[in-house]
Length: 292
Image 1 (spheres, rainbow, N blue to C red):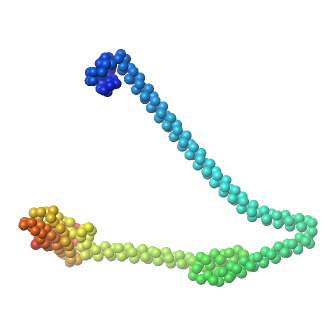
Image 2: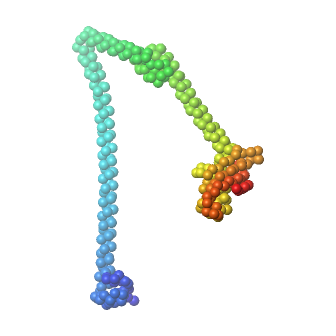
Image 3: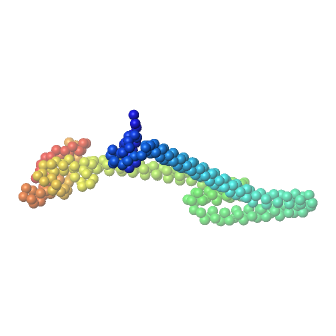
């Protein structure tokens, strides 16, 4: 049985053995169906090849992004390591050189070494004393209520003079004051949150007591009452809500609602009307009591 193939001119299905397209009358040469199938096969192969090239390109682009990320991470690590090594050398080289100089003096001239050591020690003590005096002057200007700043300064002083009991006592004192301050702030925040929650609960209860929870936030009407009035009109499209008032809940758990509105009467003029209803506080269900 001969298979069908699309006519190369009109695209209609045509038997592969046909010499003329039955739809458009276009003459068909012998083997025309094989030519079309071969062209379609070549097009499919080309499409597959292009898709493979696209996937391979995406793969290499993704690999390049990964390589760039690795190189950037390595550069950051190298910069960080260089910085750490630089700081280490900056700190250690002067110390090493000083120790080396002292050792050389010790070997070559013990008396000179002792003299130099005494000078270095005196210089260090003078620098320490000057730093302590500077920090003492600064801490004297800090209010006692600034616990963090006082703690920072007294900790620096303690590093300069580890044996000072005064600095240790100051640190203990301000740590306790800071902890008390933090605890008081946390307590104040909790109290504020509690009051806000109570205020929200009270506001919601008051809103419900006044019946506002049954009214629309858009125009202040009761949707059920409004819809009932509209449904009873000759011309519902002319309805205009003016104002709705509602009384606080009474002992029986209901509210009295009064709604003023405008609508077109049977003569084509606009007239005002008033509808009253009883509203259930718990469910907002309603019953119309009068329409004027």
